[in-house]
Structures are given as C-alpha cells and as structure tokens.
Image 1 (cartoon, helix red, strand yellow):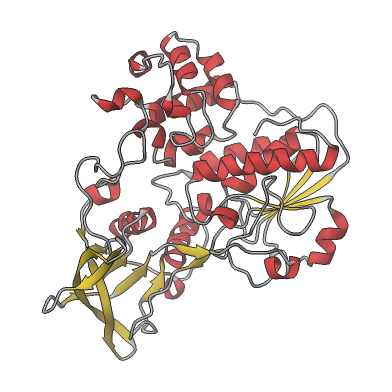
Image 2: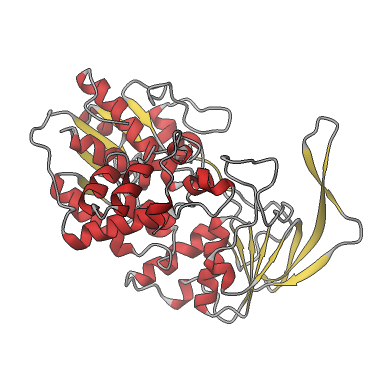
Length: 441
C-alpha cells in the first residue's frame, strides 16, 4: 500500500543528497515492492546501500521529509519499505556471501568498525583487495554495537551481516588499538593504503562546578555497559553504571540522550529528566527549513513515549552533592535572542534558577572531534578548522595513501552519511591502488 503511494515523480527529491546521502533508488524499489517483485527490489537496494538492515532501523529517514507527497500529505513510509525488503531478503535466503572472483594482491587496513569502516571494508573487498579491519573494542560494530541500545538495533542484525563479510574474505581484528598495540610504522609497512574510520569520539564535557562528583558520567560510558550485559558479559555490580532506583538527569536533547532515557527506564530509574540548551522546537515544520530540507520540528522517540520529563532552554549552573556524590543540579532558564549580527545567543533569565534532584547525571552533549592523540597525530594527518581529519576531493588525507571517511572526517553525523562516505572513500582507494575505480560510490 505504501509503495503504491509513490508518485513516480519527475524529479524524486527523496534520493537527492538532501533526501538520501546514499542516493538510494527509492522510487524504483517502491515500485518493485508494489508489483510484488521483492527479489528485484533487494538488488536495487544493494546497488547503493551496503547495509539497509542498519539504515532501515536507525536512520531518521531524511528521505521521507524530502518526499514530494509530503508537501501536502503524509510522505511515503520509505524507511519501513526498506526494512521490509532487506528482512524479507534474509528470510528468503537471497542474501548470500559473494566472494570476489579474483584478488588484486593489494592490502588495505581499515581503522574503525562503525558504519563508515564497515562500508569501506565491504566495498574494497568486493573490488578484490585484501582488507583487514581493526577495532579497539572487543567486538565489531563501533557505535552500532555499543552506542545504540539493543531495543533500537538488535545486535544479531549486525552479527548476521558480519558473518557474510567474513565469508567473503574481510578479516576482522578486535581489541587492537592502532597506534599503541599496532604501531603506525608497522601499519605503513604492511598495507598499501589505510582508511581512517575511527569516528569522532571526543565527547563534549560539562565545565561547571561539581563536575568531578561521583555519579556524573558520559553517556558513552553508560550505554556500552548495558549493551555488554545484554551480550552476556559479566560486569560486576560495583562497576556497572545503573539507573536503578535513581533520579536520573540527562544533559543533551539529541538521539544519544534519548537512548539514555530509554535505557534508564529499562533499568528501573525513579525519575528521568532530559535537558536541552535550545528552545523547544515547533510541533510542525518551521518556515526556516522548508521542504525538501530536513525540518526543524519536535521529534519524539519511543523512549520519550515511555515516560520521563523533557525540558528546553535550560543551562546547568553547577552540580551539588555531599560526601563526594552528586545530589542535585542547579539550573537556570534561558532566552535566545539575536545579536547585532543576527546570530542567536543565549541569555539567562534573571530569577529563574531552580534545582533538580539527581543521583545519576549523564552527559549526552555530542562529540566535538576525533581523538588526535595516538594514531592520528602519529600518522601526521592535517586537521580542518573543526579538528576533523582534512581530506581532498578524493578523500585522501594530507599523508599519501591515507584516506578518511565518516565522523572522523565530517564530524558526528548520521549512520547513512557514514555508509555513504565509506563507499566514496573506498572508490577513491580503489583508484589510488589500481588506477581506475571498479566501484560505484
């Protein structure tokens, strides 16, 4: 029914870069699903997307906000159709390992196993190169594995795909921190090209009085522990960050904060409050972000629907506690106003201070840049003005033979952007190694 609503647009904005960074052939597989040609639909889906089982579950679907039908009706449920195609393809046995028919003999190291690294590794292996992917954690998947809760992305979905990639010849090496366990000189000696896909893991911190109190943690210390327990790891209770029986305050209104909300609910928190610096977005698309742009509007996740409180335009002034443990936040309400250059700035509202009870404070304020110490500095790559790895039009860093893709190059972003950049970097590496690209970006 949803596939039938696709309008065969003359210009389908859903698969433009604003709608889909991968350029997915959305109208084509919508039509194939409508005509019950599912096996052909998965072929069209795989032409542009290595991992539709990931994007079909966790992508915020900018394609739907760019859908032409969405101008005056609800858009086509593109994300659901994508997920349905790939899930049916697995059920029918259509997704099978397809090792390359011949090898080039060229060796490529991919550093980081998030969606950018996995996409680059998958593409380069398809081109016949010998790919080794290194991951510092104990399991492959990066933020897909340890940053996204199981209730949003079941880890069996990742493992199913990894099994196919292994069968196709990709070599996965875990628990290796490149730059420490494996030196840069060894890396340069053993590989013909290197792809950096190690993410933007420098978390933004809260620079206020009381930050050092016990009970104040980064979200990315909290979320991975729950995922590890879900995977069967034995984490002693005294080391486990739990929201059970606690008043939880989450600072940061994005997806990571929402994941902390849902996880806190499941762990049995007494109360959950999520704070955001920015004002509350409007319920509908704001005129400043007209179709087909990604709209500025209020988004409510399933975690929010499960309970808790959301509060906007709030700044944390200080954290207060006793005996070294956090007990409350002192906050102030904000107004946002334009300065003389038209830029919005926050102004504290006099007399608006208030307190929030807190036994656990989770910092989910995003990530500022990749971690420079270690691998990146030892490679000697240049950085752009935001501290990300600087690349040229061919995704090559300032060091010949070193490429970068995903968050390490563009800053913290979406899974769909990471996959798209991994594919583009792989095509560039292929050209670098053999003089021509056999890969579609």
